[in-house]
Length: 160
Ligand code: THU
Image (tube, rainbow, N blue to C red; front, side, top):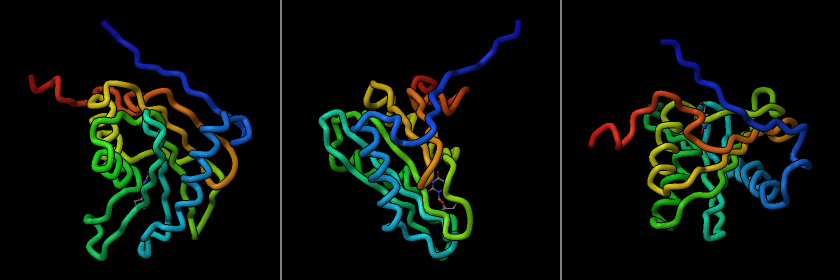
């Protein structure tokens, strides 16, 4: 038997095509890159989330002279969300970046560890996390759920 995995996602020319709420969240992610601590990579990442109660929170990547100690913006954001609002699901997360050494005009997507972490909070909140990805300018990619980013994932159901 052969099975397929496929999913649909939305692509917009730029942020003007988003809803006002989503545009605001993406603008927050773009701006908060200024708070990143990324002296080693010069790649400043910003994330912003809207919780299901309407609260807005932000996160940025935090690097370390011992490189593996560094944290991605997405996981800083998820830990902040879970610490401030432990019982509130995350509704939408936007991710942007400011690359001091190169392009800034196309989306990036979360690394493998962040995808696993996103999945944990998505299943904990029992509702899909919409994901908005874009650079400082240009195309915007929108996924309806974090689980689309990680097929064949391992989660708590596997441990029952
Ligand atoms: N980084 C993030 O914060 N999020 C991503 O989605 C990709 C990578 C960070 C990790 C590191 O501080 C820098 O970007 C370069 O990899």
